[in-house]
Structure formats: structure tokens, C-alpha cells
Length: 163
Length: 246
Image (cartoon, rainbow over all chains, first blue to last red; front, side):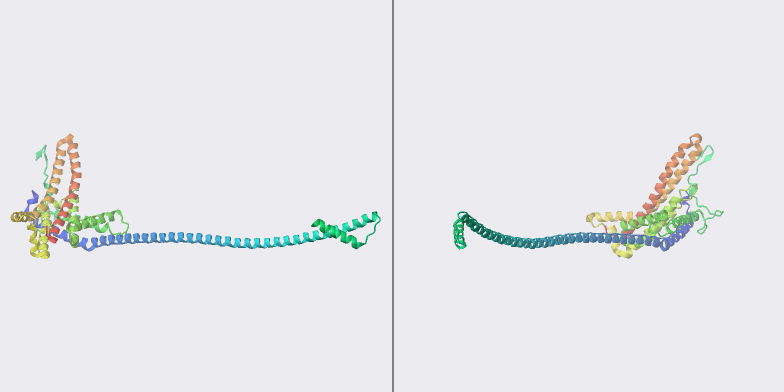
């Protein structure tokens, strides 16, 4: 069995030590620090990216909140403006209504005044017509009466009629 | 082993020969051991240095392999031996890469498997054993001996257990080295025997060839597993030196 050929042992052990020391130097000086640095870089890059993503998410949430707040504010403002417009319009309507009523009242009063005047003038004309008629009637019967008597009689009869 | 004139010598593949002729193997003679150890170092360097040369944040395939090996052993050291064992990570990585690539390169036909030699694995195991024992005494002083004194056992049993613990402790380098060398040697010898059968059987040659194919797949697995086992045992022994309490 060649494994138990002790004459080759010093040779194998010597070259094993050479190989192990060479590999240890290569790995510990070059390979392992390099790979370790790459892994650490990647870890920190991933951590930074996750932090950035978290940050962006927070910003998005804040933006959404700001949007909702702006929307609510705008709604409240719109409601306020609508209320204001409504009250202003109501006030205007009230003013116009009051003015219209006043005008109508004034016109009514004027109309009543005119009606009274018309009625008064109508009564005068009735008296006139009555006097003329009375004179004509008396004229037919060949009776002359002075104007004063006729006036007094007509006035008395009209007072009687209207009473 | 003569059969139809064909001689099967399954152990010849393990003979240490000088590279440049001659029969004398003195301690410094460049031999096939030198060649295959140099190739092992080169292969490990190719993966760990050349493969990872890009230092890319998004790794290439070669860099992924190097990072995988690094992370795998780093995590093993951290999990098995504890966080304070990380300072020995470069040495454990060296052991792992050396054994892994020695095992894998040994599977190339006509290759010489350096880890199939007890001289090589014994030096690897004894280096671990001696340094771990020295480290245990340096870090813990005489408290390191508590490793052999099982406090949780009944007092009467403790001396018996201590004897068993001491024996098992000193058997460690033996099992550590013979496991690796034995697994490598057995697989390669069996492959060679089957290959010899293929030459001897004539028309039925395909049966041993199929067997060698299956065996080769198994040996590939064994090569990686033995490297893993050798490394994880190193971590387990290192843990005893750092934390000797049971």
C-alpha cells in the first residue's frame, strides 16, 4: 500500500506545507478580503436601497395625506363660498322683495287716491246732471226755479241717497 | 490480479513518483504530489481570486461561486464554532478549499489524489488538533480541562466519563484524518478495479463501465461531502477550544 510507504512521508509533508502556506497567503491576503468587501458592499447597498425605498414610501404617504387634506380644504372652501353666495342672494332677494312691496304699496295708495278722486268727481258730475235734469224737468212744466233752490234740493236728495 | 493477461493494480495510482525521473524521493524532490498540490492551489486561486476579480455588486456566475463558498464556510464557522471563531476563518477556508479541490481534481482520470494519502490528511488533522489544544489552554488555562469533566453527570460516573472523554479527544485526529484518506482511497481503488474488469470482461464490458459511471457520480458526492465533513469537524474542535464547557 503506497500510503504506508514512510519514505515518501517527508516529501508529502514538505509539499503539503508549501501548498497550504501558499494557499493561506493567497486566500487571507487577496481573495477573502476582496470577497468580504464585495459582500459588505452589497449588504450596505441593499440596506441603503431599502432605506431609500422606505423613505420614498413615507414621502408618497405624506403626499397622499397632503392631497387628501387639500381636497378636504377645497371642499370646505367651496361649501363656505356656496353658503356665502346663498346668504348674499337671500339678502338681495329680501331687499328687492321689500322694495317691490314698497312700490306696490305706493302704487296701491296712489290708485286708491285716484279712485277716491274719480268717485268724488263722479259724485260732482252726478249732482251736476241732477241739477240740469231738474232744471229741464221744471222747464217742461214751465216752472222756473232759481239755481239756489235746485242746488239745495239736489244736495238734500243726494245726502238722503248716500245715507 | 492476473486475468486473461490483464493485470489490475488498483493501488498503483497512489504511488508517489518523482516528476523528472529517478527513484529517490527525498523531502524536496518535486513529485506528483507537488504537481497535484500546485494544481489544487491554482484551482482554488482561480475560483477565489480570478473568479471574483470583477468585484461586482451584481455578481457574475464565477463570482457567485466564490461568494457562495465564502458565505458557506463563514456561516459554518459562525454557527458551529461561534462568532469569536471568525478570526480563524481564513485558515478554515484554506483547509476547506484545499481538501475540496484536492478531492475534485483527484477525480480526473489519471490524476493523483493527494488527500488519499494518510501522510497528508494526518498533517492536516494534527495541525488542527495541536493548534486547537494549544488554543484551548491559552484561552481558558486549566478550565480547558473541564471539557473532560462532565459536571452534569453523577459524581461517581465522572472519572469514568473523563477517561472516555480523554480517549475520544485523542482519537479525534486519527478519525479526522483516516476518514478523509480512507474515503478517497477506497473510492478510487474501487473505480480502478471496475475499470480493470471492463478490460477483462470483453463483450460484457458495458456492465463495469456502467458501474464506474455510477461510482463516479457517487465519488463526486463523496469528494464534496468529505471536504465538508473535514471542515465542519475542524469547526467543532475549534468550538471546544473556545467554549470548553459542555
